[in-house]
Length: 318
Image (cartoon, rainbow, N blue to C red; front, side):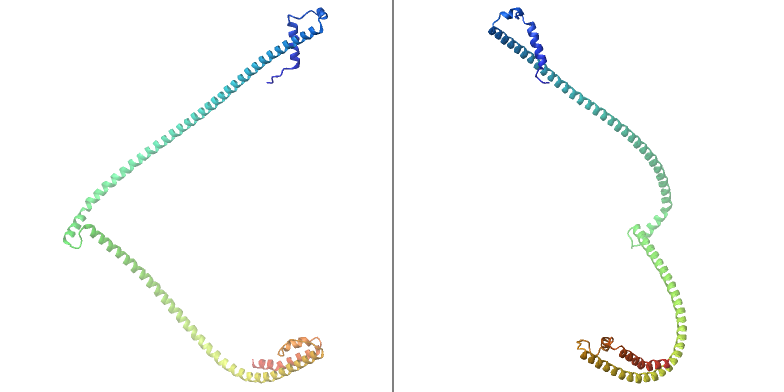
């Protein structure tokens, strides 16, 4: 709250003081007072008004402080109340949690008790079974005691073993060895049967292959005779082809020389520079093809005519 008073309230206090002042002169006496006396009266009235205002201000300030203190106490009580409510809520939640844990623990204990009871029943049944088995084993032991006595007598007569268990271990070892040997013998017999079957199958295949190879030999001998006759024909044809090839080689050499001379003449006449090899007749002809189409046609005709005897000879030989 502010500590300033409204103007309307101050004026009201001043009017009230003026109304309640016992020293106020009647209105008719104001006319007989001097200005100095009036001024003193006004100053005195102002002082009294200021004192009254100060008194009111102090009282208002005291009330304000009392109200602020009261508000602080109320806020403190409110905080304590909130804290108490929070603690009470926490207490309720903890009690609820404890109750739930107690219920859960009780349920777990009931389950554990039921499980232990089932386990006890199972163990009792298992104990009964074990007692029954024990009785059977004791009965069996009584029946087999004669074997123990027999083994003891055998142990007394032999010097190889010191205890009955050694004889039993040796017997078990021999039985295991016999079983392994029997198993190995069975495996060898099966392997022998498989090898024997493979041998018979191989002999049958070999016999069939021998017959097939004999037939192939007979066919190859006939083909050899026919091939020898063809070779004789080819040899005579080859001699003729060699002669024809020699003639064609000579002609081809002349054509190459003519093409080279023609190429050199053309390049010389046309002042052309070329890096074409002397042996590269095809490139030489490519260079002069555009200028001498007719010569190229003649060359091809001659080349075809040179290859015709060779083709004819090969055809006649076939």
